[in-house]
Length: 102
Image 1 (cartoon, rainbow, N blue to C red):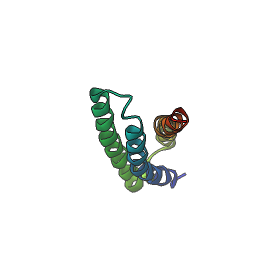
Image 2 (image 1 turned 90 degrees about the vertical axis):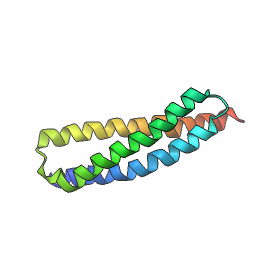
Image 3 (image 1 turned 60 degrees about the horizontal axis):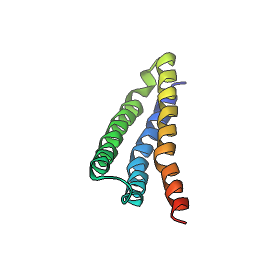
């Protein structure tokens, strides 16, 4: 149970790198459909969210072994939400734009 925080922290760090890459690809793929304000807000989201995920990941990597089981369960639930949002925002929008252009 002590390595659970370290594992989730490492995955947060990986997702904080993966999220902006996939997000920028999907953002520019749907550029012609969105207005300028939504484009800027989405771009701001792609800058702020990975920074927060990176900070949380480093905290869990270096201090995750100190977390009690209920906080580790909370981190697991937060991780599930982040994986869902990563899948929904980036991969599904890429697939939607690919099929829409055909």
